[in-house]
Image (cartoon, rainbow, N blue to C red; front, side):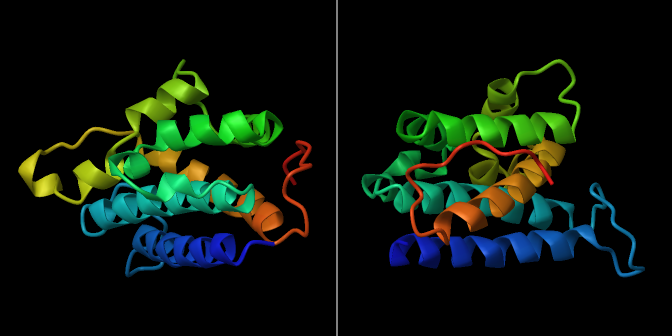
Length: 166
């Protein structure tokens, strides 16, 4: 278990928790498109996804991804993860695809449409409406959290075979 991966995963959990809190309105109902907290929730979801991917990469021994601009580009992080463990990426894709309808998009097309959500949505007031696929990011965040917890906290993250969603 990589302590760097654990540190990054725990940071991601904080942003994921904030995203979840933004999804619950003051009346206790879950609303994914409420104006009062929507932008904050989407921004936190995107950052959580980015950090979960970085934690998975760190758990597999990849550290150079934490430098430079491409750190916010989810598709590049995902492709880097695919190059290290295609079975893990396939598991994540399968779980997301089983959890939601992507309107005819492939997993990677949906990912590309949400690629720079963290960068764009935090300045949503400058470019309204911002681009992206918020519902996809929510599902991706939940899947990455679940899979990531198993991988990052495992003794050996290298030999991971896809499993079924529970």
